[in-house]
Image 1 (cartoon, rainbow, N blue to C red):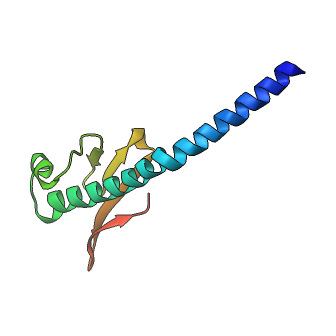
Image 2: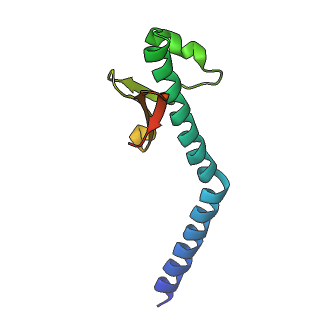
Length: 104
């Protein structure tokens, strides 16, 4: 019975630590990842298909380090992702609107 009580208390403490970690650090990191992928997808699509710049020049458009963001372009849609695709954004050209973000 004592072992079960120790396991329950340990589990409760771990759960509280995970919750605090989410609130203090991870929640902001996920929000930043969503903003970074959306910005990256739109900027790269605009650079490639609206301004007709080569893919290499897109790195000059970013004022911060975007090395963690993976960017892929298939001609119709540009996809930016981080964390192996867990957080991603897509951009494409919409007539009358220009480059817009689309739901994945």
